[in-house]
Amino acid sequence: MILENIEKVRQNIEAACKKSGRNPEEITLIAVSKTKPYTDIEEALPSGILDYGENKVQELSEKYDILPKDIRWHMIGHLQRNKVKYLVGKVSLIHSVDSLRLANQIETEFAKKDMIANVLIEVNMAEEESKFGISAGDTLELIKAMSILPHLRIQGLMTIAPYTDNPETNREYFSKMKKLSVDIREKNIDNVNMNVLSMGMTGDYQVAIEEGATMIRVGTGIFGERNYNI
Image (cartoon, rainbow, N blue to C red):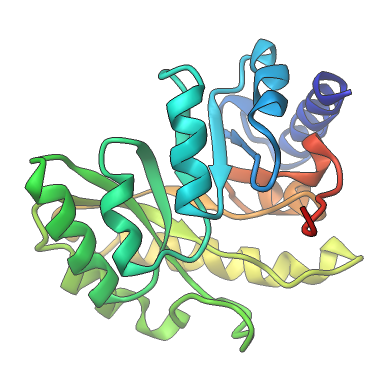
């Protein structure tokens, strides 16, 4: 079933790209495996997907130890500063940097191993009180402050759009994210790329692709509903 789900998602990616005149190769599909057993990832691996997203540092670390080392792990959940040290050498991309204090902690921990942390700035574009992320208006200032940190590489932006039954309602947020990304790129800030736009989840990733997403984060659409009671 997991492999069938992945094939369906890939067909939807192709359809969204065709509609918007994009190349499907521009899109990285991150299979969000949070709360799912490592055996589900083993079942997904024959599909060729090597990018997997986790919300919790402990869960990422446990799966990292068990599964093949060519997997690219994405930390997509809120990251506490005291947990950063456990990600060094394990995580491919941290999607959820939303403060200079967190950025400084990442710099400190990755500097100890002389490693580079690839990060995205999490933007709360919809300004939901229940969500983490920096406001769109404060994003450039944070990026400028972070750009001098030698062990960080800002690769782009990430957002979590509101949960909705109608993905069209999130189009405006995805469109604003794309514009923000372009505006920041035009500043030509040293040590800052805007190559990654991580947005769109199971319910709205096709709209996100149409508006410029380069990474989509699909969990339920691949692994099925989650049981948060286990």
